[in-house]
Image 1 (tube, rainbow over the protein chains, first blue to last red):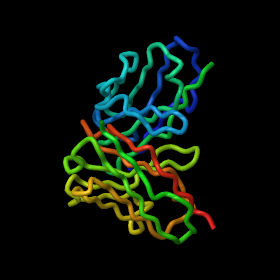
Image 2: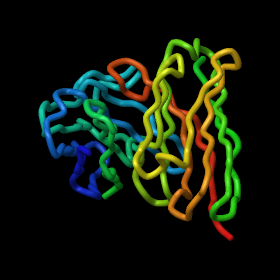
Image 3: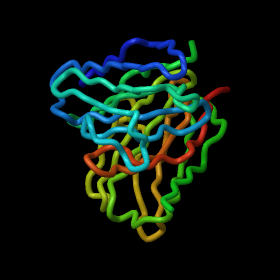
Length: 107
Length: 118
């Protein structure tokens, strides 16, 4: 099973600042990584698929990069609604697996 | 509008059974693979089971293999998860999710809580 390791576990950022979240796969997953945003009491929401393609309706301040084993989600200028937990997910090998999540909190 | 609505969660004793349902609307269920994903309280997301668009292929996480069964009724636009021999570690919010473009989960239900306790 491929292990997805996210870092940091918690990221404290001020509104308007940039946030950079990392996700590392235990073996290559090509570009088959997605990122989801989850707010308390809500279901996850798809942000990025194919490592770098924004899902429908996702603002341009969200961007994804990476391939192989190293992936990054960047939020260029944090808005109040962006404080949430972010999950990475590999859909390259069965079983599909998720990272443990990064919580982005207000500094 | 695409909607997925789970139901069937609740309190069950260890060793008991429960059947979850996920009602789909706003799209043709028979065109999409579907998954169940769960989230234990305060924890991350965990893949549970998957089923192909026509039900011909299923996959299970090792942790539920032999105890859970995923199925679908495309004529009723409904996905199911039959859960048996439930354990404390199965306690979680269970989400159904649609596999969309590039194999990402593009739509999720709101989740249904399964509590396993005596």
